[in-house]
Length: 518
Image (tube, rainbow, N blue to C red):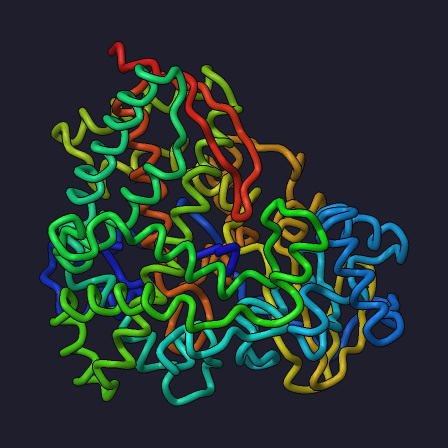
């Protein structure tokens, strides 16, 4: 989560970090992993001077308390987030405007933001020389650090803070030190998932994808990164439920659970949920990660991070960011591909199986590089439905922010906000931006569009470093999503689904699975 993520390479996302210390063959494999489809790199940075007409930022946040409450009710219940922003773009004839964002009173002390809702203004949020990211990971409020062992974990740190670089370097280490186990562990755990889907489908006529995906995702992460099988520890199969409850305590103020409005308002958006109610659950996760992450904790000490702080950051990185991302994004992939129909399914099956056969019958980074349609489908799903849709930043100085049509003066200290789907569906950057176009990123011209794919808190053509806030596991997330599509179409020619709503993403029910016929 969603941010979020939303909420995930053989592989540090930083090429230099990845390559150092490897053999020649390892370097070649790693460069294959981090190389996107062909693309141009573009560093987003708003200019201080502009040729566009200057315009005062439109919008009205209303009276204290009353304005934020009205906007929250519109956003959460009456309009929904897409219509909330769309209606205001139309009202102000601008993709940049002032508004309030949830949660507002009494959780957030100041819900006023300047919204950036187009593909040109939105990347301002990535320029850490202009915006500060301190304590803005989930919004205009910050959950209690009691939920993370008393520490402000990496996601809440600005790159200017001393611990940011050390903690991000630690996450890069996690992503690389068992890189050879990622593909085999993914195949093992998700083969079991598909087997369970088939069993449930044959006995009940349909199968819920979500619960099985959550268990497989956590098992995969534990096995790939730490060589641990949760089922053989005290944790057992409890992790998805424990994580879900722990995440609710953090994201509750901005979630909707489908309860009556008055109940949700009183329960989630009046006062923070008491942290002691999840203390025992969190301790179970802490005990598991402390037990299985010995080499990572040793690396943390070498970097000058205590074992305790490192363990709390591992829990957040694995459970909130990586597990959360797979929990949200894999159903999104199922939804997008499932709705696209059997013609796309056949094309993917043919491409994936042919590339695997041409590479010795094994799934590998090299084989996946020869699957342009599969890669495009994954990027298109990230573009259309990014797992972490909201981004925030505080202006470090007076600046000028440009949309396509005008320039706006932003004052130091103002909070900037972006709802990413409006940026990545921008019709001035993507034809048919509201549609799922499977082959959008195929070929040289398609590759150029990758600089406008922003799900990782940065352009797809950029790499995370210790000096920025781009997702440390950017390339790992892309790899996991590619592996999911590959394993799906190695096994099946086609599948059918039903799609419902969920508090985080979508709920997918599988209604049919057609086994591979060639």
